[in-house]
Image (cartoon, rainbow, N blue to C red; front, side):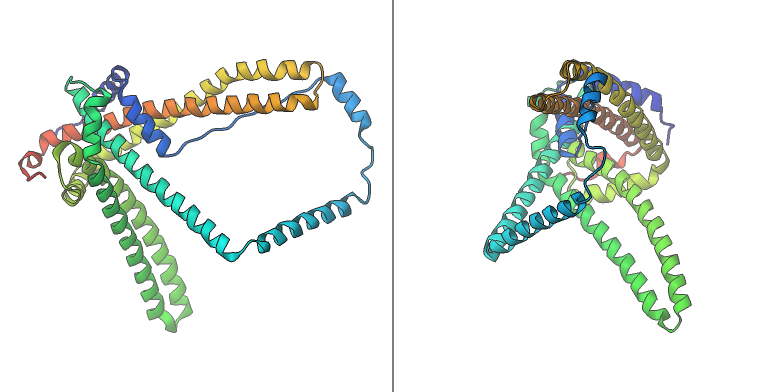
Length: 344
C-alpha cells in the first residue's frame, strides 16, 4: 500500500470544514447527542463590608448547635420517609414505568438523530471533497436513507461485544471451577485471566472502533448491508491497522489541543461579562436582593459556555469525520475489491 500523506489529509479537512458550513449542522447534532457540558462561577467582596459582617458573627458557636442540627436533619428524614411510604406501590410502579419509557424514547430518538447526522455528514464530506453541493437539502436524504442500516450495524457490534464479554467470563469461571482443588491455582488463574481479558478487550475495542470507521462509510457511500460492512470493515481495519492508528492518534492530539485552547479562550471571553455582572453587585456591599441577579447571571454564563463548547464540538466533529473519510478514500484507491463487490 502507498504511504499516506497525513499532512495533506489534515489540510484538506480544514479546508472542507471552513468552506462547508452546512456540515456544521450535522456536526452539531452529533456533538449534542453524543454528550457535552460545562460549568462556571465566581465571587468577590468589599473589605469594609466584610468587616462589618464579621462583627455580627458570634465568636463562639453555641454548644447545642450540633444537637439541634442533627435533630432537624432527623425530622426532615422522617418526613421524607413518611411521604415515601404514604405513596401507593402502584404509583411508584407507574412512575418507574414512565421513567423507563422516557429513557427508552430518548435513546431511540438519540440513535435516530445520530445515525441521520452521521450518514449525512459522511456523504456531505465526500460531496465536498468532490467539489459538489453540501447543503442541508442535498445531504439529509442520504442520512435519512441510511438510518436503519447504521442502527442495525451498531446493534451487530453491540451483540458481538456482549458475546465476547460473556465468553471471557465463561472461560474465567470454567478455569476457576477446574482449579477448585487448589486455592493458589485458582488465585493465579483469576489474576492471569483478568489481565489477559483486560488486555484482549482493550485491543478488541480499538479494532472495533477502527472497524466502525470503515463500515459506516461503506454503508453510506457504497450501499453495503450492515453485516457486509461489518465483515469488510474488519478486513480493512486489520489490513490498515497502522495508518488507522496513526490517524487516530493525530485526531486525538489535535482534538485535545483544540479543546484545551478553546476552553481557555471561552473562559477568558466569558470573564468579561462575568466581571460586568459581579463587580457592581459587590461594590457597595452584598444584599440578599442581589441573589436573583447573581443566579441569573451565572445561568446566562453557563448557557453561553455550553453553547460555545457545542460549537467547538461541531467543528471538531466535522474535521475528524473529514480526516477519516479522506483516509478511507485513499485506502480504497488501493483496495479495488470495494467497487467489485455486490451492493444493496
